[in-house]
Image 1 (cartoon, rainbow, N blue to C red):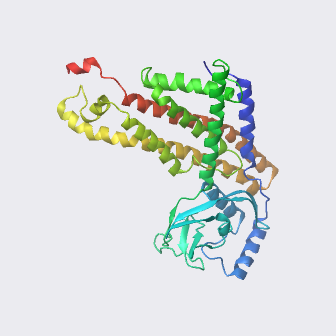
Image 2: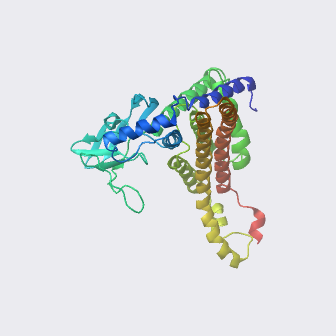
Image 3: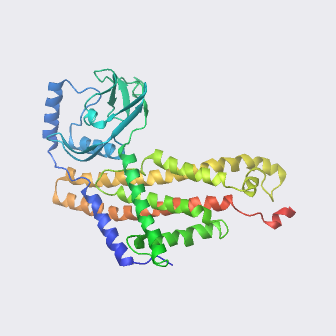
Length: 385
């Protein structure tokens, strides 16, 4: 069965496509006024410790882009820079430092305050969004050569914004496909409910990705992982296009963890023929086998590295480019420039939806290729070399 319900999917895609256009729905301000007000504020406050606020519109847009792609310890839906009001909710902070330290991220006051827990003081560094241990004044010292903080970083197990979204997406996927499985049992293998939208994609992963690349004999034991990784990456990519400021798959630690799963499954489930082709390649002169063995072994580690970089780079670059183009509307401040920026952002939003599906497909396809290579059967003609 091929993908059906094209009109429904087109409407859904068109709706999601329009969501990124709200990402920069913030009030504009004249750069001269912003610079003057900020300079006066800094002069009166004696410069806030640890960072300097942007003083012009371009710097504010660049700062917004930087903070958008970073993880955060609270979930802020929108902020009003003029009043300093932040609309959102805090998340739990869990640190391992002189015991287990658990408290709400509201203590940080969006990075402006020092949080105290059991006599320990912590502060969020504005440059990297990480938590550092400080004194009661919240002093963060930086290395003169590298500019990196020299404060001790506690082991952080916090539920950050990215972790929170991952849990929500995982729960949503569980509910959707649990309902799809239940409808199969109750209605004689006929899908009903919301799961019907995703049934064509499930069949596509099975018939066009798993079976052709792994084979009829071994594909079933990998189907659960392939379906999970496909919809997990797809849902996170789509959620990342909403105005919520989420960049999960554009975080290299997330893509590294996903690539590591593919790496472990590939090598732990591989048969002896797979390792034989790596360390003692059949059909090749023995002197060449000695040369090719380390190259093939290096390829074992390059494959997951390419998976990690490909997904991270495409999603991260998409976020930066899209926000940069939307930011041009506030810089041009003319109906011609703003209209052109809006049109270009609209077209790029369409492209980003395609990229969301494409990257989920590529990650799943390459994983299936690696699984197929790990289960390749021994060819009889090779035994005669």
